[in-house]
Image 1: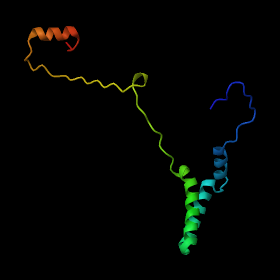
Image 2: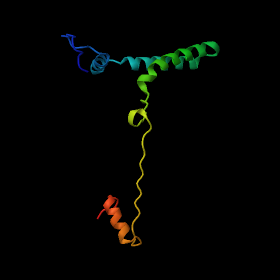
Image 3: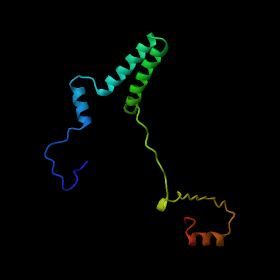
Image 4: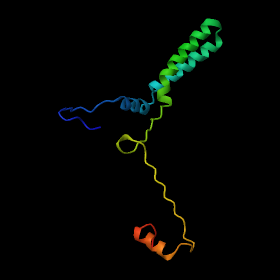
Length: 119
């Protein structure tokens, strides 16, 4: 993305994507991996418990999983089709019927003159 006019930045931006790429290249876990591992651990702890404790652990795991979900499976962008000036999309259908020798020479000449039939 280009820098907006009037902004003088001399240092390169250290974005989250660059930080994550650096963490991966150094062999450390990413924040997403930590979130998933934590959610899995809480869920497994809940499996060993009973009653309200089990429900509480599962709710903690679900809260973490909910925060990690957009990074695991992002939503698809919505697509809207529209025609000129935001109106409906125009549909044009052209049907070609072969002559089969049934049309008169006069009607063929008229059609050629109108540009409907190739010579």
